[in-house]
Image (cartoon, rainbow, N blue to C red; front, side, top):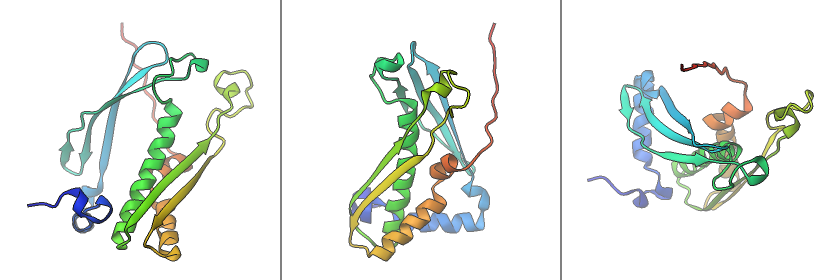
Length: 187
């Protein structure tokens, strides 16, 4: 019988994670993971995002989730859902939060509180093509991590450094990546 998530420190099954790390050391292909999502226009500024599964090594993981993205009324939306930028920041923060909770659990630290606050700003003149010198993307992303638990300052600093080095979503935003577009025009 397997333990429920609640019985593990911080809800992280450290023995299972250690087993997965050993598997990856022996079979590097087990570490390869591919994600797929589909977006469908819902009218106006709304998009529906649907997950289409994850390929983890040789395993196909079913993922049947969806969510709606919208814009505020001032940007022609209906203000019913978070914006694409809020989801982007949320994805970065959530990925880092996983790193913190796993890192703390690996070190035997019980967390009492873990929060991440992110701030980023856009100059919409670039998006609106009003000013060709205005950047289109975020100028920067600032974040603060608030953590409380039975770990030492040095342990939390080590976790922090590890998350900075190893968070996939943080790295994707912080580093240039190749984006490969493809346009299909249906008749």
